[in-house]
Image (cartoon, rainbow, N blue to C red; front, side, top):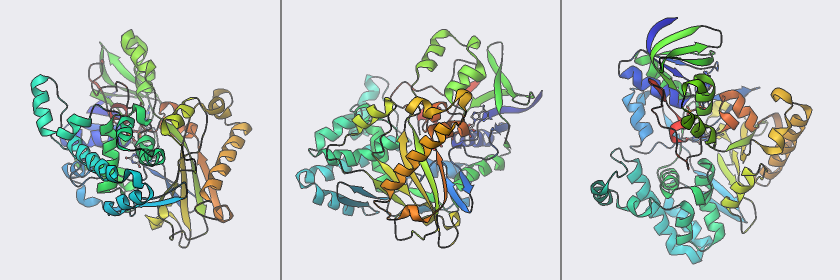
Length: 480
Ligand SMILES: Cc1cc2nc3c(=O)[nH]c(=O)nc-3n(C[C@H](O)[C@H](O)[C@H](O)COP(=O)(O)OP(=O)(O)OC[C@H]3O[C@@H](n4cnc5c(N)ncnc54)[C@H](O)[C@@H]3O)c2cc1C
């Protein structure tokens, strides 16, 4: 048993790396351990043939003085990474409309106003409110009120959040707009990126997505998404922190009610003063800590936590240059009365509905992702883990023939939809792969392949846990 470390962080996802880098900077001897042989968890890339694909994030909300920019600066790595603004943010096809969200938000607002004249004035007011709430809640001094006196101060300092903060996004959309299709289009990013239907999503969360992504832009690291994780790992190393890859933690060692280190799958043990888990919260407590070290009330709480959404993703290498298309395209179908609340209800029943398809061409952002004259394409949809009895896997998770053919059926359906925007796409495919929610689970050990940790509309786990010297980091505590 070695005890060279003050802190062991389980998981080198973006949450574990960031936490580890900050702790190293604070002078603690920190080790970050991950079961994978690569860094970054979801924030990573992989190769198929000569094509590279991002596994998770398709863009990062930096914010001019937002917490990402601030964090990179604090870790001393701000100058080691460059970002390009994704321009336009996206092009959305829906019910015969084609709407571009560009740097110039006024243009976007104008095109929405042309398509939805009955909601003309409300559109401008809506974006103004969203931007104000987003700026207030992401300002470094933001703190929710704790008592009556602080409420008075809060209302003075954060007036827009005070007015809209306790309302659901659906409530805000309904109070602003008449046209259902407009509400559907504006609800796409918040309800897909956060995995929560508008009726369950508190307005400030939606405001952060809309206010910051639409107004301040979405960015992609030069060199690819892996650069972002690598850069934070450099921040960790710069401050003396260490990384250990391809080592799974099988147990958090508890002695006299406190965490004193971890046991690895190979049987070796590492001792530390503190343990931080960036691993899935259910895995952390149910498996790594074990129920015998926890009070029943807490294990019941962990057990009933609902996981956020997962999805189905198709990765294509195509022998065509797709530079004439934007890197981020959304196809939102042709139904006039579409509604995200109903869509999420369908997903939660385990049914797969391909209503909001993201068509991404990452090689248009990062040319090294595909050979010259070719392109990498990603098709993304939310999808339930429980679909057709967990995707018809066999006993002990075996990827049966039924699993493979179900997967192929969904791949073909998604390609067919994408062809409405990129004609003849199927004729140019030279590399094809896909991920089901089970694939996401296999790579990250996140329960149910959850993309964003537990759903953010419930009491989220706190950083501080009931086990002394054991802490949590990453999407387990704050969502995506
Ligand atoms: C398809 C997709 C698209 C997304 N798009 C965006 C986007 O555009 N913008 C955005 O900001 N976010 C996006 N997200 C969300 C974002 O990727 C996640 O919120 C974020 O990456 C989560 O980071 P994390 O560190 O909390 O967890 P993870 O990335 O899940 O990392 C957890 C790490 O812990 C490791 N681990 C688990 N158990 C063990 C163990 N027992 N021993 C050792 N290691 C272990 C895993 O291997 C993994 O590396 C997207 C996610 C997905 C899947």
